[in-house]
Picture 1 (spheres, one colour):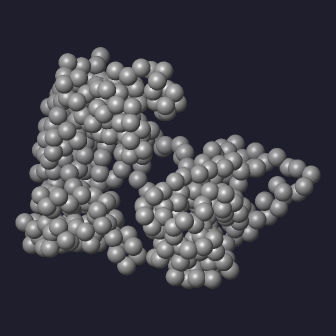
Picture 2 (cartoon, rainbow, N blue to C red; picture 1 turned 180 degrees about the horizontal axis):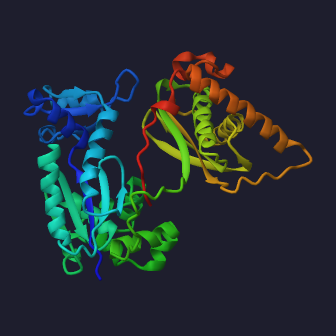
Picture 3 (spheres, rainbow, N blue to C red; picture 1 turned 30 degrees about the horizontal axis):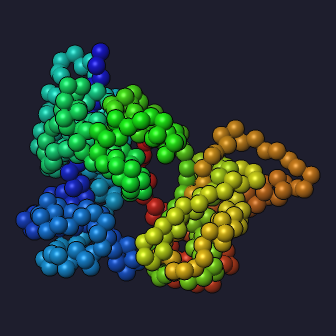
Length: 409
């Protein structure tokens, strides 16, 4: 039986919710944007009217104002968006238990084998119900795999259903730019374009060995995606996803100008990451840092840790070693991030003659005690001395302020 998979995308989600609850701004250009004071001043999403001015997600707010002087900018209200996301999801649950979120405003549904309705009928019914019962619109892609279903929901917006099947996918999918394909970001697009691969069809008809040599295993996956050969299942709504990594990043309130500035921010990030790992009873073996300078040029570097850990001191030390080995301070830094992956789910501790494992265990117990104090008295009741060197840089709380979006692939 051919699979019938839906990808449902809430159109301009944050802005749609705000306009729904504020009738007085519905006929005006609206953008939901970050805080300019904390240098997160970019458009997160905007309504259709704002799109007519050429505004786009990720655009700096000062630039958006120049293009649209009447732009209404609203700070994000994530608890509200989460509530609306859950309302929409409850509609999905009337049709299937196979519901896999992809961010706050997108979901895959597997409706294969429904005894009463076709996938297309279900897609249209969901589209109409969300509009009638919730008050926002969705776009739906229907296809035989998750990748093409997602392309379908992006193909026609807003408030539409697009069917991509085995008969028409070459006509619909293959002419699209390769950047539209899941997992193809800016760097991958640039690399593909440099070899004359501009569309998904170009990628699909490329030589397997050539793409593998360019991107390794990821290249093999991209070929499957482009050719419609992805067969990954839609996960059950109650099935928890195994954590692949835990991380935090931040855009700093001012540019970082030296290693001391960087260490202050890494200290806060590492404490949050370590605390979140301990919350899940995890230890990780690979540390990764992300750095973006004030010209928005970024890079990612990683290192293998000697032993799996969830101790912040170790994360700070290795983050600084990786940073120092890879940054020459040609330009100040605007934002940095830290994450840990390769988790040891068995929690096997290997003791050594140097006593490092015993020392790590003591530090872990100490930091667990600090976690309890912070849970009771607040995040700033105890801080490392490094964080007190510049409270403007260190006074943020990624442990509580970070927003988690479920992501696949």
